[in-house]
Image (cartoon, rainbow, N blue to C red):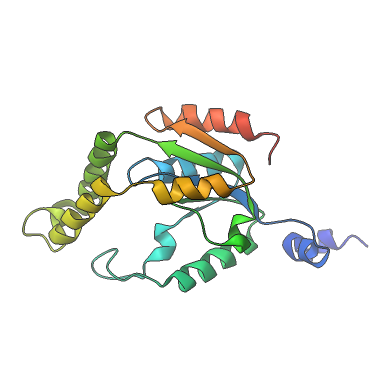
Length: 195
């Protein structure tokens, strides 16, 4: 009897029971405003992977977005739970170092680089498009956004770059000023034998 035809087959459970590697993926890292989320979504659609963005896991719902953070442990638990439900995933974050249990599932890491001025312009435009007058002087998110802009302007990628040096999987550096379609095509061609 082929249990697949009766809808009783769960590929992930079947694989886990036999020690087969499932739930692997690609990490996309880069500074705030580098375009990692946009690239992650596009690449996930192109490859048929499940896209996960760290911002969806890092904060609880609140009236003022990004004001109610989860603990590192909560984020790890939520990420791992979703990764284990998927055959393949793409995770986008400034730094995708979430410990060996998650890091060991990366088949490659994409490091997207963009000049600071371009990133800051993207961040400000994204915030304005998303929140409108709430981020302007007098708005309920003004102070929070001003602090974030200052943080993004001064943030370095040292921690991420140090982590990249420890990885055993391939790291692919790309120019985030290129169109997302161009970068996604380059990445797909580069990783075809890795996935």
